[in-house]
Length: 482
Image (cartoon, rainbow, N blue to C red; front, side):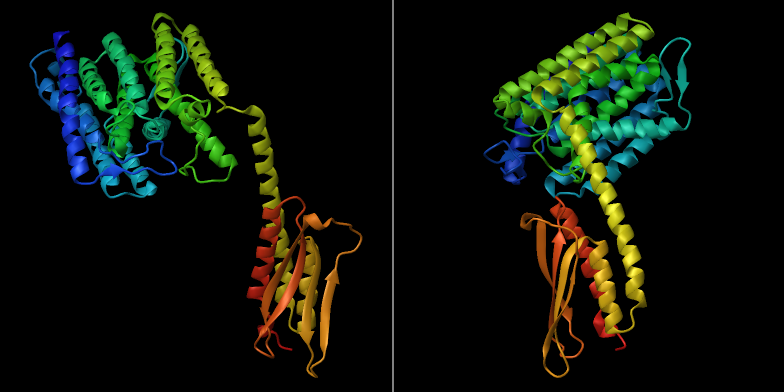
């Protein structure tokens, strides 16, 4: 027990000493996070705090693992797994540090996480079974690789997304480390207790400088390293406990970043945006929108995390179905917290799904129409056939009218016109556009005027006009025989 206390206090003290040094280095090298539309801070802040966290943790872990005691013996029993976990974590830290200094594409960071997760899985740190009851054990087989990789990469990015307010990610990660410490005290191995205490201590010291108003941010070097290390450690501990508690407790402790990430993915899916695109819909943004100050919003997130983790501790006293019931109840309370702040909006989600479904079928129908219309253009050999194809396309694409002014060979003017009959459409539901067409005779541009029925969707109207324009380009009148 003295060793546990020493490594925690030692890493805390080392973080208190290291972080100010990192702040000075970051300022001197101009590695700072500048204010912007996505940021809540108003002045440049150093952003390589992950260096202080990483150094403070590793400086204590390495010598302790070599001690000739129970901890050292525990390390030697699973030496390959621990060394791989720490080295893979170090690799992810370096990738994050490069991103903090020079910037990396999202794909590059994601690829690095996948590689590190695969390496960790390769040495046996996997979720092989899920034990729900004594008689109900789910053997995942080869799916253990997929589930473990998804878990590690998912948690890594969840922590990265949660790093949006001063001290938010660091505090939640410190609480999660505490949860895993309790698990390892119950089930072992002692070496994991030391690793989590070192990480928790480094976060404790770092929070003195990261809490609002922050003097330093952890950056991607910190958030990616924390997410990867905590996710991998929880998998290793879960494999030792051989019960659902080993994974369920970390899930509850990380409830805010996990749910926030899932809801963000759903929100971006419904809005048809990239999964990594920025927005202001995260849990901490919702708290700020309610009128809370940044410090109070972070404290609220801390309290929710502690309540979820504390309630989850009851799972250590339950068995089988009771454990699952406790887990589900606390998970529902977390969902309720998201509902209260406005992150969960059932009616809007249902409406978004319906809109997504409608748009999908619209696009599918428009593409089918385009492919059918294209056959008519391919058969056009002379100008009259080409104009018939244009009229057919206008009808199928829900145009209202098409007008093409022409100059005859003798210099007289005429207008080719097509108009849909039998419909009365208001002017506010009509999109008017002029499309230039190369005149094969004069070399100048002919102006094809089209009026499109928007049918309540400017996006659909624009998409139909785009497909129509594609037909005019690919089957130009300049290529006709006569």
